[in-house]
Length: 495
Image (cartoon, rainbow, N blue to C red; front, side, top):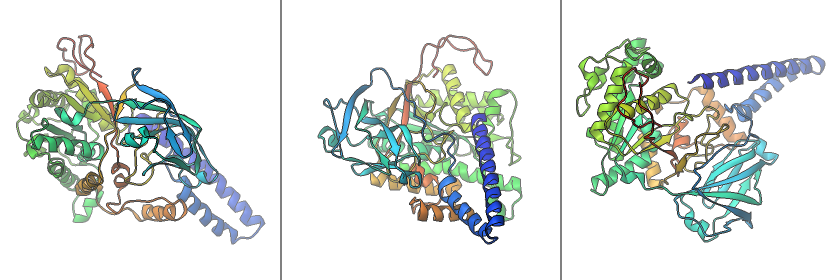
């Protein structure tokens, strides 16, 4: 986690402890003055209420407005939400990504049940107690919208009389030569299985260029569940690293990407930030006792610069990425969002890629940014699997990027769920406490989870939309010295 995420979590836990202490004092007082048996009964009721309605990690007020800015050329119009329909004021502009900005207000019941907006056959959920500006994703429903047949209604929330519709037009990036950067095995599938499987299908039929998937780390840490195999901590971490390395090379084949287009760099989990801060130093695994990345590279399709010494250092990471850019020559790079996604390896992976682009002789044109994690809301996308992806909470202004939200068919969603089921880090059953919490929330808060897997990502990632922020690579960066202390080429690309 980044420092900001840690601070938010620390503040959340402090407030929660204060609330629990106050509740305990109140319960003790009630038990003392009324009847002793009220204390255990009220304690049980308070715990059930906490698990049902107050266990979410929501690090902002649901009454805060989301703050988005779109490119100046984005088409927009005021629409009316009357008679249960979205009614246009002017003909619909051309574009595949449709976003509806509106002010939602929770009803009283919407403080106990997740407020929902139903759009045709789609549903998008929001924070309990919502009262502020939110953004619905209407992508894939242009025909119904243009004909005035797109129905809309709020459940446990009130809709305004009018809203603002934004229409963003993008080329089909699945038809461009693409490189997908995954800090860990499963990041590519979580963010972009629908996109890369469609691009791979086009490449196989000769109707689209090849794509490549580059995984930066082995993902070997937090291997406690492998200790049950009578392994010491380091051996368990090595086994997990081997399994997730295999996942990064084998699972993309389910989406049509051959192993010859998949590369595993083998660096160590949560060490990428340190590698960039001290690029000459080797940063061994925190848990596996390994310090040579070549053990994870046996199945790579061609040699890379770090194969010479196997050192897990920042200079080798940068050299590998430069070599990959110049070998695969992508027009589009799919990578973590450097401002939205707080995972330390995701932030550092994005930074490393941008540094490599500055050094490389090959310059991609466009980056597609994804967020598999958020600072402020661990449940986004909210609501059940299979539904749409509303825009995530953004409480401080971001660059005015365009957005692209391709749609996934039901068959592709099923394939995506099965790709996630193959990932070893998403397998296994939940701890008893989490399973009990889900049972309580299902009963009292009407929440749902899919049958495809118990991990929360099966609910969050398998949706009718995938979502990317579109950011061109800037060619105007002045020459100088990059963060690894190596002189730049002439003015090159950065984001």
